[in-house]
Image 1 (cartoon, one colour):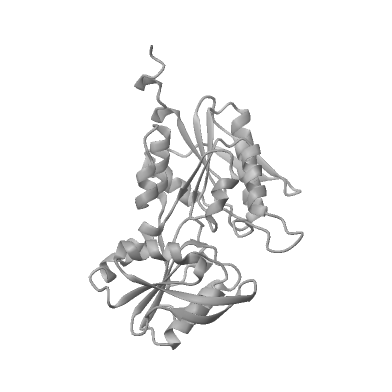
Image 2 (cartoon, helix red, strand yellow):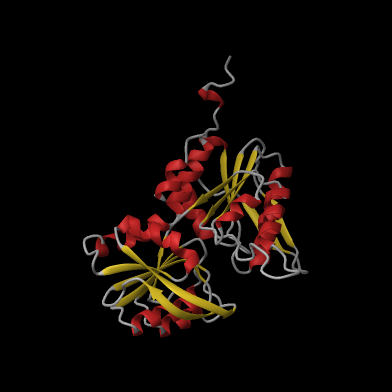
Amino acid sequence: MSGCSSSSHITRGDLIVFAGNSNPELAEAVAKSLGIELGKVEVKKFADSEINVKINEAVRGKDVYIIQPTSYPTNDNLMELLIMTDACKRASARYVNVVVPYYGYARQDRKTRGREPISAKLVANLITVSGADRVITMDLHAGQIQGYFDIPLDHFTAIRLLSSYFKEKAYNKPDEYVVVSPDLGGVTRARSFADYLKLTIAIIEKRRPKPNVSEVMNVIGDFEGKHCILVDDMIDTAGTICNAANYLKEHGAKEVSIAATHGVLSANACQNLENSCVKEVIITDTIKLPEEKKIDKIKQISIAPLLAEAINRINTYESISGLFEDGK
């Protein structure tokens, strides 16, 4: 019987990668790492703002990967993803894999008071119903979102990539550096980051009187006279993280850096970072960084090689467990 022979595996010729309008530069980098050209697709809008998608090459029987972070403008980018997925499914693609490096609505993952939606679950339902067979994402704001999907979901982390930036600086100076979690909920992330660099951690205890506003109440751990690395999953308006950085600096920290996977950078985030005591901000390219937001303090690390390796392994039925563990 030949049903389980290696010849039945998907080959590179059956792989096609499409880019939405959210972050075409990342998609181009992923395709380059895979040694292929991006698939031909047109994503435009009609006069009334409805999204129009045209897939300009055959996808029948192929493994399709659609790269589309659902960042700002979130609703437009989400609809693009859903419509592109539907188009590929209706064109008889063998598998449609959606690559969503930044998952919008992830912060609406539970009910905190009556009559609230769980929008992160709704988005998961929409992606599934649109025809997706698999989801690939990075550093979800809430890990339990993985359970919102009834299709396979591969959840990668950028912790290893981000911590590697500080390796040369901090690896042989464990007494001079400390990794700081900006809140109690980020302790696991900070611990993973610190373990790679063999550093200790500190934890900021804070309260939130309202969204995007926080007050530092206390810091658990030793940080005085040290270079603090604040580690978070995202930087939105940067108000909270800058408040934490300024508190650390005012209470004895030598320097403060920030490492985060997603540079959402809403509203006056860049101004907040510029005006803060933060020395440097290390983010990845899960979200496109517009020219007007490219300030000197911000440095980007690309996740394209990681995504390309994940796509390659999924496409050829190889194990991807090592990528979860190492983020390399």
